Length: 268
View 1 (cartoon, rainbow, N blue to C red):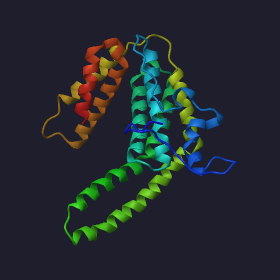
View 2: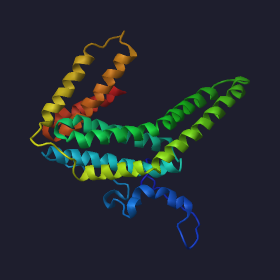
View 3: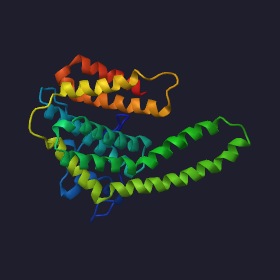
View 4: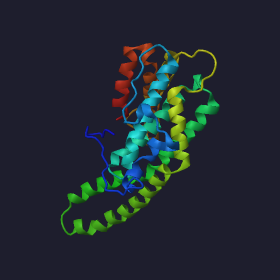
């Protein structure tokens, strides 16, 4: 499985002749659930995004990319290799939820809304681990800049947070070992093959325009005195406009690509 730095992810462990070594077994369940893994992303690579005029085809491709991203980061979370693996799964879950929301008018809600709920559960299961990773990293940076004896006095705080992180890591791994998680992966794999849709045609251009107008209406009201809640609301709408523009890119073209790029800057 390729890692973020481009180097391959390899697990090596001496084992006996009967079963695979435990460390190897730990990283395989998501790929080999029910005895047969998803061959098209078994190497962790992302499916190619289809650039055509088919709205469902575009959605399928984007959903497939997020599913592949979850699989790619799964082993790193199980083995606690890198904080970015937890972040990667949470981002992929959030993006998939947002895409399903953006495509609501053309999807069967009895299929898409429960799937969005399960993605929210997955992201939440890893949330505490992610929060502690960020907090510990920031505190460690601050503490490194202190003089003695303050630096020594701050060490127990990091130790306490480290203990909380171990608990959060156990919760995250329990989620990835659950039947609920494997069922979610099955649903995501199926969504990449073909989501359940409503009858009738839906214009992605109109969907993107609607989300962009909602963002613009809120952004026009922002100013130096805007509250945190108002800024947070605008950021959420920026994400929605961005993901809907990604869906509509094949229909809209360059304007949609500009919205996607500028929305990233806006969110930051």
